Image (cartoon, rainbow, N blue to C red; front, side, top):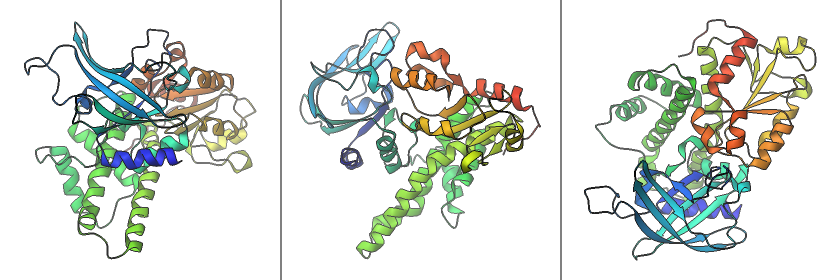
Length: 399
């Protein structure tokens, strides 16, 4: 746990990039391993100015990076950031890790990569880096910043956007001003859906819709958190106990938000699709899966290994926790698991497949998994289509 706490402490004070290591990053796609892909929007952690034509930068630009990799064992690399712009290639990559580097093995697919800029005053910039492996460590880091897996793959934003010309953000600030207290997850999730309908292009694609809702809710959360606590933080605390109470409240709220958010948005998607389902209903041994299709009553009346029942669990990350769902419902042979996890190692995916666990992921995340497993994944839309055939439609909707 000290390792992840060190990462949190450092990330709070330094420019930080977070990214789930994909199958391509870790050489698990069967293709040539060419380093860690860095999102284009994160250029500031690599170069003093954005590399592009017209501002004097080269088409293929490099910067040396001295990186201390924390964990067991600690490792130091003299790596290189490269901006490639040639033909259709337009990307940043971190390469050159030296002999004995073990953080990019296929088994590390799905680790959370945390890169912090330590010193940018010399020709060779220095960095501190972590690769967090377990669900517990990953969730601890994300929770500390109120993030879900969908808010990674970019620079960590410890301050909410304040552009007054952004109508959507202004709408959130106006709404925050009407609130007497910090809104709960359900209310923020509903607001995210309303803002998506108001400000974003319409779509009938549930994979796109879910990703938008989750991203917007995170934006809402950060703006409202800043609105309620900006002055408190600015003017300080009268004593240590008051500070600790405030900090604990903030951290607990951040920790609770992401998982509940995913369940709320999935529930709304299912209602919009007119599906019949039960939420958080008890099965055997007082277990409580997230969703049962068509209903808990039909589950209890169904024979063992029925093909007419679907049980779905929802977990933001699932590298380790996927095993928990196997005992949630004894009457089904196949267990469905919706996750926002970006990438899982081939060994873990093989184990899941052997345990008859069907992963369901947003379509845009499929490319982060090993190539030979992608056809075994199910998109949000594919799951909804399957659930519709099992449960039938009732024509419900969701705000």
